[in-house]
Structures are given as C-alpha cells and as structure tokens.
Image (tube, rainbow, N blue to C red; front, side, top):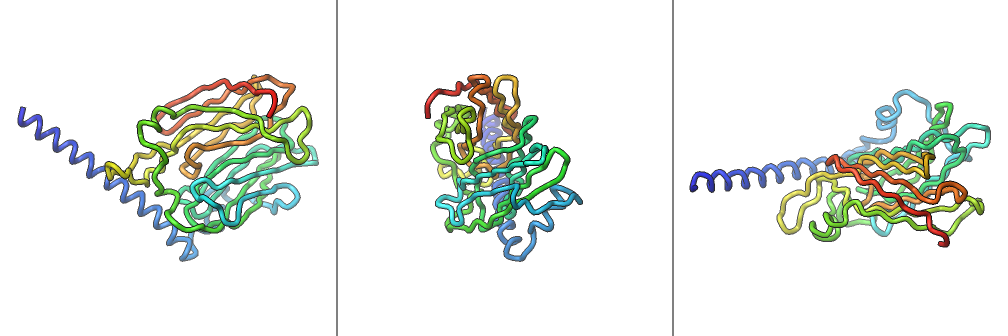
Length: 284
C-alpha cells in the first residue's frame, strides 16, 4: 500500500510538472508573437507565402469589405464582419480570416456552399496584440482578393493567455450547447433572405491560460470544424483555431423559402462531435 501511495503521489507530481512545462512553452509562444511584431517579423509578407504559396492576391476593393473596431472593447471577443460579392458570374469558393500577430494567425477558413455569388459573415476572434486583420476571398476561378484592417490593442492581458469565464464544471456542463436566432436584416437583404445568429457554448481553450485554482495550464481544446446545412443545402464548412473567441457567435444569411431548420455539426480537438438541428424561428 505505501508503495502504491508513493507511485500515486509521484504520478500526480509528474502530471503537475508536465502541465506547468506545457503551459510555460505555450506562454513563451504567446510572448514571442509579441516580440516578433515589435521586431517587424511575422508580417503579412511572410505569412502570405505560408498560407497561399506563390498565388497572387489582388486588392479586394469593390469586392471584399472587412469590418472590425479600431479599438475593441474586449480583445477576447473582437467582432469581425466579412462581406463579399461577385457581379461577373463568379461565385465565392472560400473565405480565410487571418490575424497577423496571433500565435495561430489563420483564425478561420470558411468553405462556402455552391452557387453563392455573395457572402456575409460575422464572427468573433481573440486579439493577442495590435495587429492587421485580413479577409481573403477565393473566387470560383481560383483568384484571390483581400481586404485588411489594423486593429489596435486595448491593453491588459493577451487574449491567448486570458482565463476562461466560468468554473470548469459549468464550462463542461454547457459545452456543445447551441442556439439560433433571427436578427434584423441590413443592407440589401431581401424578404426571402434573413440573417441568423448561431451561438455556441465552447471554451476554445488555447492551452496558454492558467487555471486560477489549480495553477496548472488548462489543456488545449479548440474548435476544429463547424458544418452548417439548411436541409440538404450546404451553407458553409469552417476550419477553426485557437484564435476563435470563447463561446463563439456566427452570423450569416439563410433562405426563408428553404428548409425550416439548420443542421449544425461541431467538432473539437478532443475528437468530440456535437450535432444539433435548430429551427429557423419566425420573427426576430
């Protein structure tokens, strides 16, 4: 029995030290991204080749519109909007959202459903420091178009190291819950197209935040995939990263003459999958 207790104590100590080591490495990555920006490294010139290779990226003026606050109120959940439209017969194939100075710069990649000549997406991301945020839209012929915006840092703790809100039990109990609501239409939305807001309960742990009670680093658990269908029609698939905010929110248009419910599939880095069928309610 004493030997078993010693082994148990050793295992607990080893696990604690391993967690601390992993967390320290993660925080160093977080800090190095800040130094990289100050030193002028890790800029778009380097990132663009890593993400898109040698492909030409055109100025997206008149095609891509990117919205984000100049000074966000909360860098843990910075609202970003992306609108794109082709008037020459081409459709939108994909949308890539990049946050230059984040530890994981490619925040989200949306692969759109067929025959979408225009897209309108809203999301929330973490901001590690002052950075350029970019939306790169891929047309059906493979051409790329970009819009960018500088978002300044409001101060305080870097978002990648900020602890999650709520206690672990509450977070675990709510993980995977989703809700859908209709929102007021803007711009050129028609009576048969209505924006909806999808809310997802998931901490999207970065692996860089310290648990305030145990003083261990909270293990990485990030959203990896999101699939959204209206009936049999694919609206989009999304590949995620740690740059997505905790409890993310997505806004996008749906057709009111299509199926009256969305099928949403969410997957994370632990291999967990949640499937929800959410009705598109009448009214706002």
